[in-house]
Length: 234
Image (cartoon, rainbow, N blue to C red):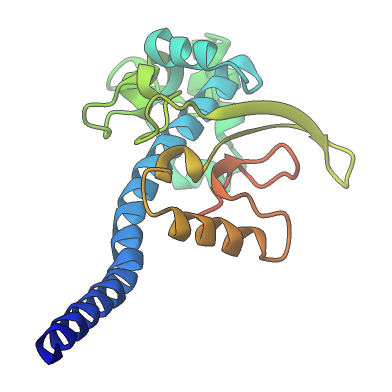
């Protein structure tokens, strides 16, 4: 009988130790894996922001359509200004600006250029040249993103097919200016739901209990306030 009691006590102690270790290890494992996933989601949102900024430069507004955004990244172009030559210090001291210089140069009046010292006699050409060239969006804005795939922009990493929610709107500033805004977001549950449920619920509870209207997930931009397209991790 005593042996049986000892066995039961040992088993109970072993179970208690296991439960304690698991309760400690659970949050550690959750934090480690959620950090990895958060970084992947954050990078995807940064890519969306990069694409939206380029889209607005060309189209004049943001888009709420991932189809339009992805098509633009794959096939669109952005303008780059090629610059050759600079104004000399004495020219600027005399009141010459680049805008004035380019206005004279674009008139194609060589005599006027020579009079203002804007003609390069040695090379028989204007002192300044400013030309716009067009390059592919994916090449210009995502050249540092190895293995970047525009078609993946809509999908949440680790989300098992979940898609980001994207929206656009216009806001009026306190000074009366109207500005275009966008947001893209996804809740924590979309890519952390297969992890420890208690830890996930605690994370969501901690975020929503903070002052202000905190979003329980990852988000870039906002259609509620003008935040210069900031991410909620920044």
